[in-house]
Length: 267
Image (cartoon, rainbow, N blue to C red; front, side, top):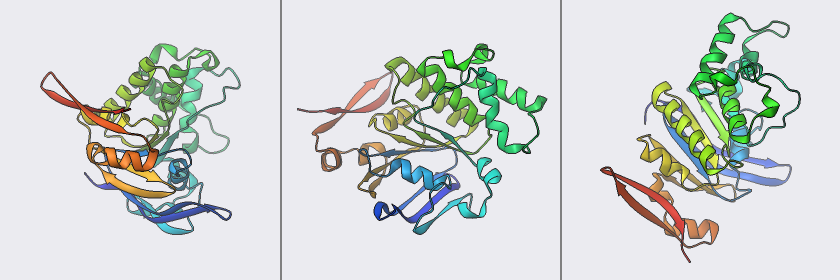
């Protein structure tokens, strides 16, 4: 793991009197992937909200590039961290290029407009996600997979070092899920992007690992971190039974000289 881009140390958080995170610690190096795994309500999205500065921890600290999140103003933080939500309500029929350009909003004053450089960057990011031909289409007419790629392009347009994704493939079919994962893997390898992804898919970290990416898993339950480490170590039969109550096995598949792993349920 390279330089520590994100450091979470002993973070706790509660909504009113309801504790959601309890003494959570983790770190993430530049150009690597960290997958947050765990059941609904375990604190994955809340933790991402803390990193984004939306949630204020009751204890502990969060640092980006060695500096406390609280020391960044909103514009500075937007230049450090981008976010791709789990779902998005499509409202007005903006052009795809306009949606992507919204990723540059933070870098301008309240009444200023994007310039030629911003428009060029928007087109370049659309090209990175394979949607350069979609620039003039109304985004309200996109499929779920296409919309997700547009939201990733919008996040990329921020030029932030760290991208947070909350269940980015939750509503996608198999083809679009693999397409999104493939593009994310490519961005990590070619653009040195750093990713913190919350996911329900136990096989997402194995996908990144099979692509030669430095990936670790954070297994969470009831607001606590149970274990952090390599996918094969953390997604063990014992750990997954403890968290989900389901018998699983890690299966190994060797093809083209490579070992690939994936989790299956076992009845």
